[in-house]
Length: 467
Image 1: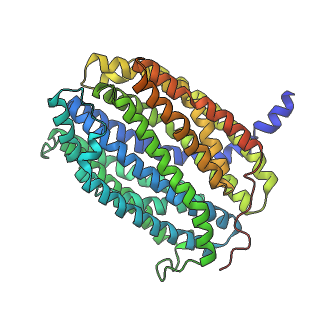
Image 2: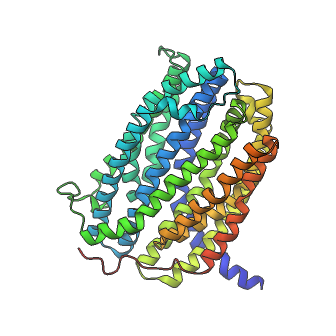
């Protein structure tokens, strides 16, 4: 029995070597990005609780935009990964064009919504039970931050269109280098512009936004420049902008497969924001505590999130090359590896709960609640890792309709109603509510297990696509 388990779930040295070569740069890229966000968050938290709350609320909406962009590039990315595995660079080129067009559309819509309805959106997360001074200050700082962050939507959207295709070609080090290139500027500008150091003006939350936007431009620019200056390693880039031809057959198939994925990502992110909004009914102190706890768990979440993304690339390549049995075998091993890595991450996060909230200039009650939330989220990391890996497994074979139900259905039909009911219809403390809603992920684990086990996702979706 032990031998059978090892054969099914444990890979050999060559397996782990190939996976780590691909995923370590991806993890480092996201770790660096999240680390800079964490430092930015801590610096803003040093100014005051209202500033931190304003930035935190706006970042809920930026989060929805970012995840929607991820979903938008993921649909074409399914085809791009399989085209690359097949050696069809013309097909891959057309998926890049599709990504650029859809990202441009989302940037336009996002900028319009955030620019016009900034006050209304921020107010959704502010409870009437808080003092008028807190409410006014939080809204003021949130609007300041939002106005500048709108500019950053452009480099983020276009940069993701490029980095997604670079990764699907196995060049995971380039996005990592791009992220590293932006780190120094981001931290330097954060320190200088938030606190008025190094001869720079003291701009507070506006300084944090300027630093973030500048870093996004640098990160996107590095990836784009590398792609265009290395055409032999990026054959899809040759003639990319000579025309914007996308075959009707491919466009239809990307739309059919990709739209559910994009809407799923949007609705999942919007659902997470609605859950956060439910928590905020219990006061701005809860908003502040959740902001602190999410900052540290997001940092370490880079490990399991990128392991899932790696599954989509590696398994997708095998599916595109028609190596279906190999794809199934690799997926088993990667699912186990993702969960094992997440357990290690969880163990690392638990000790941080005691001291990380102390880095913030806020009330003791907020720090105590943040510590508790970190512990609950640390316990949930292995669950999140498994469901994330299941999601990318289903996506690798183009089963975007099923992934839509898996992510959207669970979030909107279980988590949101559960959070709403517990907050509005009970007198339970936020401690109990947060734990119950977070650990409801167990239900999704069971669903994901049976979906992956069914093998419904094992498909080659790029055969017989007409040019």
